[in-house]
Image (cartoon, rainbow, N blue to C red; front, side, top):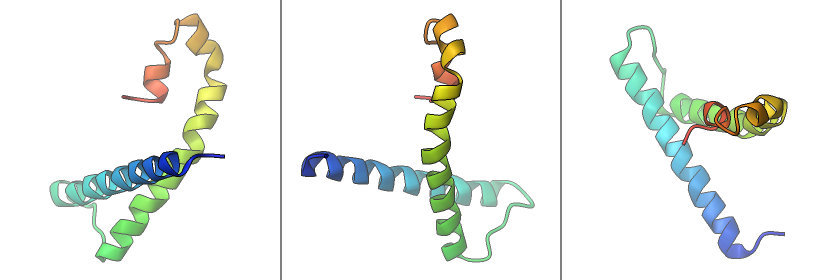
Length: 83
């Protein structure tokens, strides 16, 4: 069980990552022709879905790529989880 302070820190981190993802999606829609969002709600939902997928896929990739990570003395982990 996480302490209340740890839960708050995790929630703040998730919200910040969510906002950064939303900003990145918005920026891509401004800069790249063909990337469009019909409304702000769709943009926010897309950022939320990407965040949830990232939260599920990243741990699975870390487990699957463990042998490569051991062989490269941990350097391959930078590919799976960028800083």
